Image 1 (cartoon, rainbow, N blue to C red):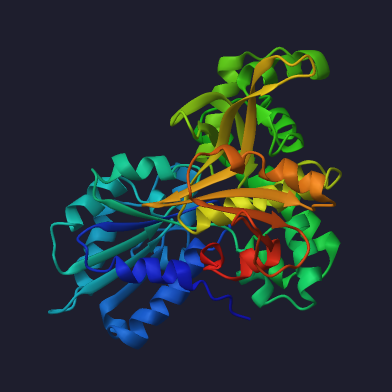
Image 2: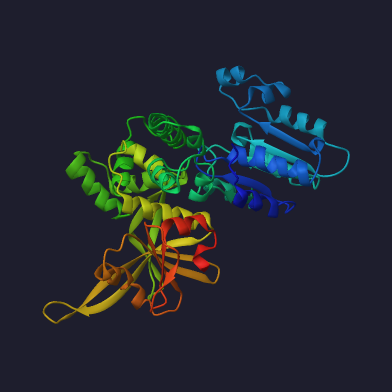
Length: 431
């Protein structure tokens, strides 16, 4: 069973021969190595060059390490990284006499002084370099600094619903239910039972993701980080800020943890691609509102696993999935705020803030999107479109609902469509 990831494959293809190090980033277990070593490698051998001009090397592979005279047991015992001298000597022996040589390097952070090695290779026009790295020491924020501005990032996400459903054995509705509950980590597509999926997600969360963050940031193992992740998971798609969270810890958890520490922990979680912090944007005032903001998880399965699958609020999970899909499609995404004045029960004018779930921007394009889950009646619809009515512009406005529904435009020009139709068609926003 092969999962096509054409969007990311094309991102690699269009970056070929641009004189930069192509750096594939994303949450652990989202398919970075598969993209580079299987899909991209096959493209190269079928369309670009022969195998003698490609070198795949994984720095966590005992077999590959043996090729350069390194022993993984000795590396672990001596607590050191792979020798740059041994690796560079090996690479120089592989160079073809002419033509481009493609280096596909996996888990590059295990090579000592990898920044200096790769930056030095950039001076050789014969070399094309592609790398992946582990989240514990090789995050998206590192790319700008580690390669002196010559790192070109390709950010990948867990499987989209379109990718997930393409290999799912069942109906589309069953695929949607599983996707909302267990998320899109690729390994899940080969698992047949709920028990397998639950154990896998819980193990990854506790033994990989949180462990990575603790190691990278030199945190104590009794840190409040897991507790904070619980609170954020419970409040996904709701407004939070560090001060609110500090009060929550004090009143509900009986734990003292300061707002600055909470803010720092949230940065660690975001850098590790576990969560996304989304600011609010004043649509009419054209300015950002720093706090409070919303939190969305990179993967709904990991979010649900953190809560032992006890709080599966479908409306919040759908909103989370919409956010991730917009980011996957390349949009910059904010939570929209529209301020209006309206009369209260006493007839007095008062300020009121209306929310637009997402303001999605890509170049000159902008879309206003509400994730409504279901619209039972006209009153509910009026509530959803009220913020649309006050934006003061003509950008496209879309309401997404959970039931299957082909795009339908109303008398205001607002489009309503089903979540499946939105997710399965990469051009759905244009409809």
